[in-house]
Length: 405
Image 1 (spheres, helix red, strand yellow):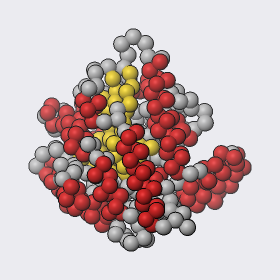
Image 2 (cartoon, rainbow, N blue to C red):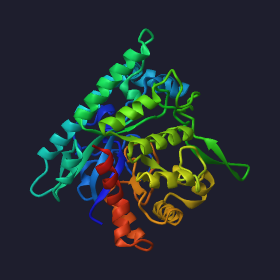
Image 3 (tube, helix red, strand yellow):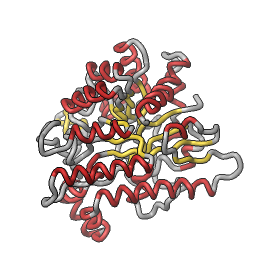
């Protein structure tokens, strides 16, 4: 395998928020093989020897509400004690200003990284339109801007009319399009003005009296589910989705409530646009609203869209399966690919969204980009070379060709 299209990774999250990381992919921090919020999986040393040919940098702006309330009381107390200034800035930061800073941080990091690449080593290239993706040379890795969570577009002020807020949002979307944003995730952890989010608190196994039970992993932080539905007159759901498609920005439906995902499928059919679900699993293996039902998989395939299977067993498998199966996950990932092929009749809807440098728990047998070739190796037992290339590259490339206009 010599090319992989990663639909979802988070280098700018670490570069922007971790004060000891400079604006470069050359930083080496942390241990990748287990969950560590301070590591840096997408550093250049891991990318240069990987099959990654293109990846979406999902700019995640930490929601002020999550910083103020999503973090549990003990975590807030520690933050006020150990880093009061830093924590207070998180609570009061303007999301739109932060997003602009993250975009600048990523582009600075690409420039700074390339200055230290010697000889014929791979160089990073910020790609701002699909035609540039087609022009990649064999020694370049495409870095594309995407956005995780429409809250980064801002919140409506108490004295601001809905019409004025929407006009402001349109201006910001146009600016993002000009800066090369390829895709926008409509929801994330907390409430926003546009799309209703699920409760993304992970479910984990816990042994009680010799029995494995499912519990919420909410010791340090928690998320909550929106109490309103798509189409609520106080929100701008349809307006945002339609404007993104008009501008040629792909829609990513991860973290969006299931009823709302179906609304977006209908809108994509109306506009003849593909849809992306960039880093998730399947309800067949773990029946959680974060994951996709069989009916959704079939609908996304019908729309010509792509599903990026996530490299985290916490979403791929039920908590009980996770408890008994250990930390390796490649075999489970391949099983889900095979299931989708049996369900749909081909592999055209499958892709990969690693979520590297997010807050997920990585596979122990594939926890950084230079280990992604292990997935292709295991796929050889069940898929043809053409199918492997379609899953790891071709399907995502096709979706961006049609939807990123």
